[in-house]
Length: 143
Image (cartoon, rainbow, N blue to C red; front, side, top):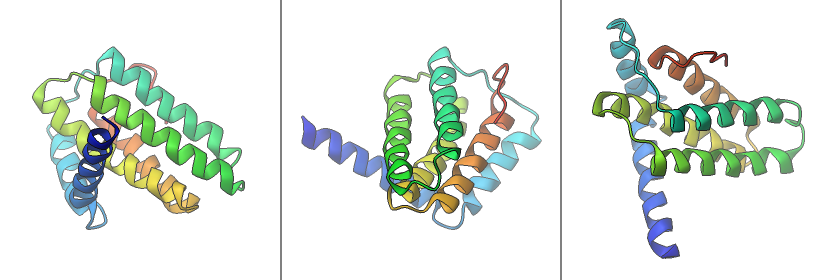
């Protein structure tokens, strides 16, 4: 069972990286196309709870960013939360397609955290949280 989960996570991470490898050029184009259509998707309660958890992790980490051990730990926490979104979130197809590049960018930032790169990880995750704000009508969302 562990092997299947690890294999699945490896595939998801590889896919997310492949989607965002060109400094997020494809990501930005997809997001801008959706944003320019002025359509905002309605997040599920599951997605809202987990995105708020990601936001709270980032707020907590900002106070501990000088502590390399904490940065690495938060990388794992963020990865776990995103993987939980993949497992539990049931969005309509267009909303699901819109959230995937954003989650991929969060995973990239979390990977940076895991190797001690706070600044680059923070930049990616902050961008992803701003994109989420543009794409989803999440009452009270303030990254």
